[in-house]
Structure formats: C-alpha cells, structure tokens
Length: 265
Length: 307
Ligand SMILES: Nc1ncnc2c1ncn2[C@@H]1O[C@H](COP(=O)(O)OP(=O)(O)O)[C@@H](O)[C@H]1O
Ligand SMILES: [Mg+2]
Image (tube, rainbow over all chains, first blue to last red):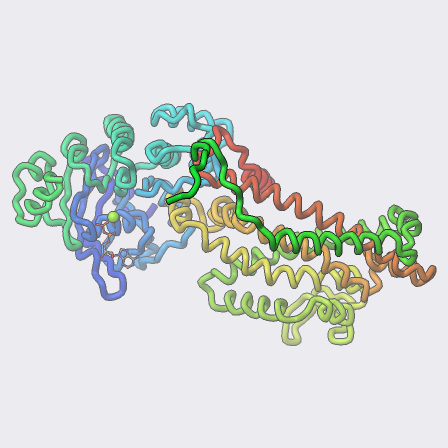
C-alpha cells in the first residue's frame, strides 16, 4: 500500500523476524530472535522445554504481543502499520485479517467440539471469507481427503482419536489458504502409535510446497523434511543451518548436550 | 469341635441372605399409613369440592390465565437470558466501566425481591413522569413518552421477572464462558475470526451448553414466580382463579385448580429438563455411539445460522 517492501521480491523471505523480544513481567523469554523463512521451505525449531519456542510461534501471529523487534510477512509488518511516518498498533479486526494468512496447529488440537469435522473446516471460510457454503463444503472435502479424514467428515471431535483430531485441525487451517503454516508440537499430545499418521500428513504438505514452521521433538521428521533447522535455548537462537549439518556436526556445546539427550531417548 | 456335621451346599451354589433392613420396614409402614390417611382426607373431605374443581379445570378463564402464565414465563426467560448474556460479556470485558455497570446491575436485581420490583415498576410514573431519549444533562430531547403509557401491569411484571432472572443468568453464563477452553478462542483467532465472530460462533454456543441444566432449573422457578403478578391484577393462572372465587366463594377448589395446573406444568418442564440433561450426559462420554445426535448443539447451530 505505502511500502516498497509490499511486493514480494523473489529471494526475499516470506516470513522475517528481526530482533524479536518478549517478556512476561520481568521474565524475558525471547531475547532478540532473528529468523528468515523462505517461501516453500520447512523450518523446524527444536530446543529444550521452556526455551521460548511456543512463545516465538505465538508472537508470529500476535497471539502474544512482542515487547520488541519486528515481524514481516511478505515484507509487510505484522501487528503494526505505518501511516505516514507514524507506526500504529493494529486493532483486533485488522489483526484478524493478517492472521488469515498464517495457519496455526496446536499441540492440543483445539477443534470446535460443538461442530462436526466438516463444520470445523468450513466455519472460517464461510464466516470470515464469505465463501459460499456449497463451495466451502466442496473445498473442505478435498482437504479432508488429503488428510485422510473424508470418511469422518460428519463426526464430532469427541468421537475421534487424537491423531484424527489433529489431522482435522490441519485441514481446518488449510481451508483458509494461508501463506504459511505454524505447528506447535503437533504430535506431542498423541499416543506414540498415532504420531506417524500426523507426521505423514505434514510430510505430504511439505512436498506440496507449503511454507511451514514446525516446533517439534521429532528429530527424524526434522532431519528428513526440514530445509532449515533452528536450535533455540534460553530465548535465543543458539545455532541454525541445514538439518544434516546441525544434527551431525553441532558447533555449540548446548546443541550437543540437547541432541545427546533427545537422540538417546 | 463342631457337635454335628452340616451338610452345607457349595458356597458357589447359594446366594447369601441379605442383612434385614428393619428400619426400612418400620418406617415404610408408618409412612404408608400416613400417605393413605392423607389421600383419604383429600378424597373424602367435602370442602375439597372435587366436582367444582373438575368444572373449572378447563374453563375459558382458567385456560386464558394458564396462557398468560406461560407467556410471562417464556418472555421473562428469553429477555432475562438475553440481558444475562450481555451482562456476562460486560463483566468479562477489559473495560472497568462495563464491569462496574454489570456488577451494579447484578447486585441490585439479585438483592431486590421481584415482588417489590414489580410494584415499583408499576409506580414508576411517580418517580419519572416522562421518559425521553436525547442529549442528557438538559440537552434537547429527541423522543419522549408519558411513563404511564409505557407502564402497564404486563410490562411491569415482565421487567420485575426478567431483570431478576438476568442477574442470576449473568452469573451462570459468565461461569459458562470462563469454562470454555482458552484454546478455543486462540484457534478462532488464528483462523482470522474477529472477537464478535468468535464470541457468537465459538464461545457462546459452548458456554450456553454448559448452562442448559441451571437454565432449566430457573425456568421452573420462573413459572412459579409468575404467580406474583396477581398483585398487579394481571390475570395469570392464580389471579384468574382468585377472580372466580372472589365471586363464588369456592376458594379451596379454585386454589386446587391452580395448584394442579402448576404441578402439571412443572412436571412437564422437569421431564423435558431431565431428557435434555440425560442427552447431554450420554454425549459427554467421549466417543460414545457412532453418530450421537448432539441435539442441543444442533439446536444451537440452527439458532446461530439464524443470527
Ligand atoms: N503467558 C505466560 N505468562 C508467563 N510466563 C510464560 C507465559 N507463557 C510462557 N511463559 C514462560 O516462558 C518460558 C518459555 O515458554 P515456552 O515458549 O512455552 O517454551 P517452550 O515452548 O520452548 O517449551 C517459560 O519459562 C514459560 O514459563
Ligand atoms: Mg512449547
């Protein structure tokens, strides 16, 4: 609208995080994070519990308001807007428009329990994007087919396993056709035998070219699928690079200690 | 050591004899006798005048009164719940002005008996002879009404009943909203829903489901509270009966007519309430049934589509 950064330039990151800080009271959880996510890339974030991974993800779509730094999606600042030379906070409804472009999948699924799987998926397109109901249903069924949930379209979340719920939640996010999908430990709440089916859906999504930021403890997934791996500890990015490099030749003691722990488990 | 050998059956073949419940027997007999005496008094006492009761049970005046009682109950509940939702949202808002206004309303209408309120509303003209919309503090008025034209026994009754209900409903609905998982709001936000959309489509339907049982209770209470309107000479079930016995002096049989109708209505409402609760409970068992009906959800969904 008013900014040369608005046009996505080839080679510019789709999502860019600059010097991001977040404190809860006096507790500084993110202490200056810089991250760049290229279009079509899968970025995995790993690190010990409490290192600020969820907080980082939640800042990206402003579920948490950062205390410092900036986030850009397609070159456009997230959560704030320029008017002339002044910077304004966005209202909730402006934020809502921006959030449509970032899907998010939670550890706890958070499907709407009073709606069937199909209703969960069409809810936002119909309500927010004003897509005609019939068209939304048609698109939803394609998505549900993709995540292997077509047969369960008329089920309520309480009637589904955790893996099925998470796959439905992924379809629900995809229905808004986001530019980027954020996953916060999508398999951590699942029984071990259900982890695979969710990871398979995410692999397929990555193959289809979706830009993804995935916080995970699944090192196998990170190694096989990620284009870029970030190791976080104590609210900073300790180390990042190609997964093969970070996992096999970690440069920092903290990375080595962490990897030794998770790979032993 | 035993003097005589028993020929006991195998322990697997017999059922042990139950511990005698002597208390139950004695109490049961006494209560049964008392109940019989009561029935005998009811049936044989001439003062009950069952013939008169039967004659008035379906008389037009009584049926009209019954209709008025049902109308008052329904209207007061709908209005009370609507205001209650509003109050609950205000109470949970970040604005301290909204919070304070909601708190004040709930404090007042929970504290003042509905009967006192009704009489007060009916006499509102003594306090405010004219009600107007316009710029406050002496500014121009856009519209104004004579209070006596707005207030009649019916509107005074509805206000007294609905405002009292709104105060109780607000607290229930607030608890219901708070019981909805915070993840629901976040999931809605990440899908790009606005606050209003999230409240209307995601949070309220779930909160209302939680408060269905207490709302059922309140409806039954409301049905009985409507009998207070007889002080405003509003012809509900009780007042219709009173008007008849004021003329015919058949006080007891007409009170019986009203009593029987109240019992019939509360019994029906209780049955409906139990059916809904039973439904909810069986649905709450996760994964139960292939395609459980989720009746209230479907009802709410339909309601939501209509909004
Ligand atoms: N809403 C909050 N209020 C206060 N502290 C928080 C809040 N959310 C997270 N934290 C704190 O921030 C730190 C990082 O949390 P989190 O981002 O969830 O870590 P991770 O996802 O890496 O396990 C933890 O110490 C946690 O206690
Ligand atoms: Mg976390």
